[in-house]
Amino acid sequence: MHRPADVDIEILLRRLGIEAERRGAHWFARCPFHDDKNPSWAIRDEPGSPRHGKHRCYACDEAGSHVYLVMRLLGTDDARQAWLWIAE
Image (cartoon, rainbow, N blue to C red; front, side):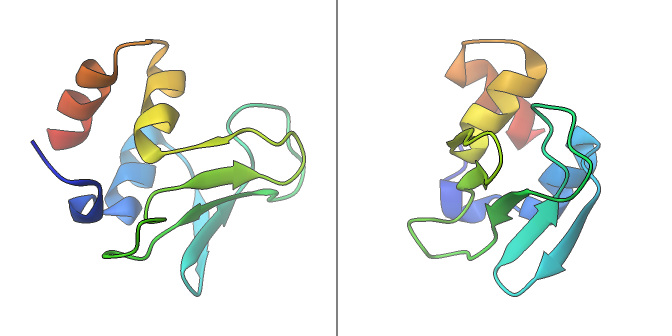
């Protein structure tokens, strides 16, 4: 099983179909949880940091880990299934 710090956020976003732009330690995109006209959602890409993979929408306030992001977008409440999907 991968550790959160091992997750490549750029690849994760690509696999989820989220078009994002990197700015510093964050990727910014339109929020995948609501109809977003401007990029208001960000995910941290800072391997080694305890905040690596944390995401937040500054419009709807949806937030969590990259595992929670995958769970929501896959439509599951099974964290193990999300981890297995990430590890593929």
